[in-house]
Length: 184
Ligand code: SF4
Image 1 (tube, rainbow, N blue to C red):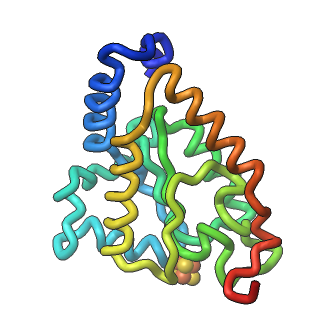
Image 2: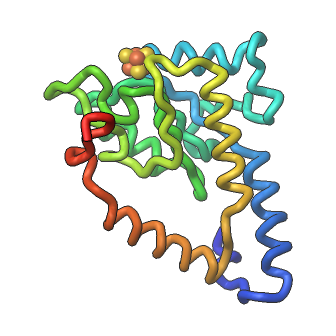
């Protein structure tokens, strides 16, 4: 936001944080953007049966400059990766990303030369949504979890501290190629 970097810590900051979080979480606009079969579920979530509009999320924007949420719905091919990055760069800040489905999160069953093995190789991801494909209810749950995250976001000096902590935790985490899941 710009202003938040100049806010002093302490008095009133908590209230400002809560207010900014409340406004941000209730005004997310997703970019109209689908890559593969998961996009059909994303479209279903916006249609009458599931009615994403209940959460103020139905305004899918055709221009990235009017959007601040990217739902990566489907596998990302190597050819498409630079386009995904460009759209992400053009979106309004602060921006968020949901990796929808196994393919967007990790490459899924497409362990081959053509598919990026997780969109987090190209853009930062806030929420990973499992499933092939995830049902519209799961997408809505992911969006609500993202709302929770945004609502609790810190501002000013607190924000910088949290970003540093998150970066340090990410660097200290075990690389995904060493994770064994249930085989460990
Ligand atoms: S996770 Fe499944 S449904 Fe989604 S893009 Fe991949 S193959 Fe298609």
